Length: 380
Image (cartoon, rainbow, N blue to C red; front, side, top):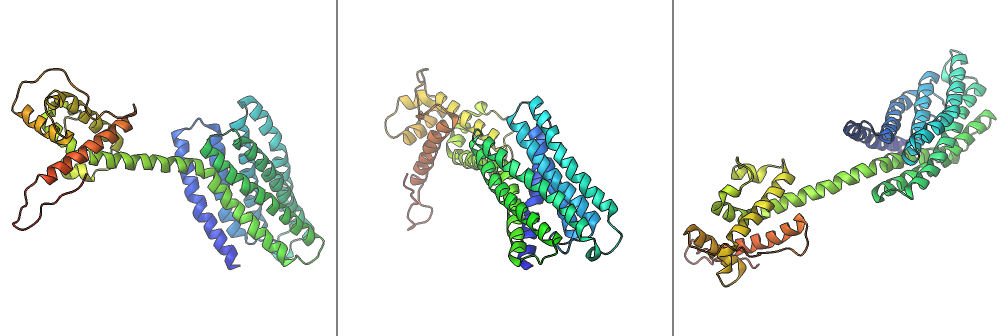
């Protein structure tokens, strides 16, 4: 029992954040029918979750109160139907998907009708005294539809994953594994119902199989459906972190060029040094601006650099001094620190190398502040 409680808790911890994430994504793309279906799937799962806790054990012969069980299984059937619609609207034209969705609604409606009829006809007695035949028919209708729907979803997921983008394909592969395990779990639930209806003792191994198959399959389903969006956000977070680090690593070069050419700044209201160091807002915009401003400054200082000899950091430092003295130079610019590739990120990497070399040269030339203390040097 403790292992089952642990699985239920893990299921809830994964389920509700995934639902919130899908609702957020839906607000960003409200016209995406497939995303509506995934959100409906997780919403049905979330609605069935507390009803399942309220109803008690779903295994026979302890069925729980029939009304919470009815709504729990209606939401579970809605979950499976939403999954089928997700794959239909993702892989087929809208008209064909709608026609097939109407066909898939027929077994759903039949299962709900049987369960509702059993619920209405069930006598008002404690759950332990429910007629065995009525309880068995209720579960049989639910489990047959759930097993059919999960097996169909597994087939659709494997088929759709073959032509999907890599992240979506990986997510669908995980989800299809959950579907496959869930279909086997559904078959064990059907076996439990039939054994109970026959009046025989339910084997302990069969009861444990339902727990260790149904709950892990639900977890894999949630993880698989959430994986593409989460993976995309993680990739975006890596880019964000890379841009933030590059932005700050360009500070030594940008500072010197900004002092020489303040009119090249794209922002007329620069942040203070502390706010600039601590701010995590507008990272991409600030990154692009800093790279562009550094490149513009290098173009303007390049005629001075062309007249000097030595390493590039030393020539750049001396060129900035010459510019400050307003020394005359030719108007023709020269290329400085050109990247191998043509993208902005390639340019940024080359500028970072120059910026860190410039910072290292400035540190190496800084005199010792205290007698006897060695000058701090950093190899570049």
